[in-house]
Image (cartoon, rainbow, N blue to C red; front, side, top):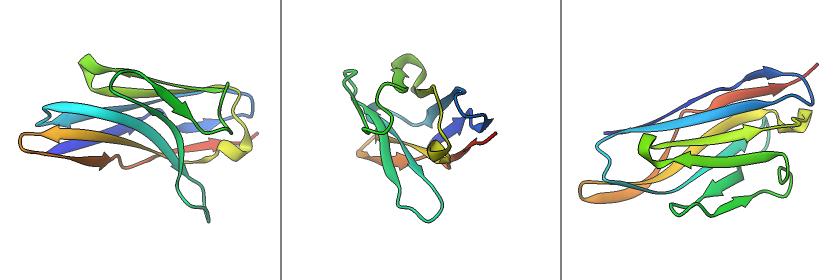
Length: 119
């Protein structure tokens, strides 16, 4: 059984910062790519940032220069440092990880964490 548990969401003023964390646990043999996605009310879920097992990163144009994705392989954890937050960044943020268990590999999603950007 594999779980992804996110934390770090909350309410922040425009221009502020938040750091999201997502920890994978369970019967894990290996973790491939990891990423953060977000979904605002009435909108489709969109990719925010991804990081490969080797550390290569990819960002949505809307967050480049403001957000940084990183991972700690020893802790099976992926982070998203969000700076200079804007009201349009408000959404539920989900992490996704490609995880190999003993005999299978697939994508897993976390339950989501709310980010609210408002004065």
